[in-house]
Length: 155
Image (cartoon, rainbow, N blue to C red):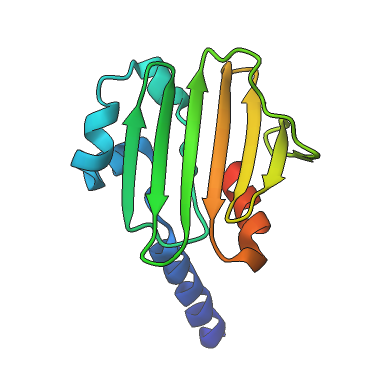
């Protein structure tokens, strides 16, 4: 009985330690220059709509943001070859790219998926928020598609 309790406690501890803090406030605190400074002038409405995944399938070591008129890009970097760029397009026009593969997301949206030479591109429209999310995921080829879909579903 005690072994089971110890095992269960250890698993919970490991799960808590392995989770990354990727919320808006956590990112602003952890990366004040590269993330917080560019997004600080966004309206609260736009900050709420930012495509920030709750989790990514790699250890994030750096986060950078770039803010343009109707577009915000957030780049998640690792010490290895993994990186993900999530773009949020506000007040989009009908600019979705043509994709041969359509994949349903957990949110109910349907994403267009394109496999490129060195990354996976995923794009979908969120009608409730009136934004387009775009994801470019660079990582190990054998896990690339699965990891990209996990990130898209975490937004």
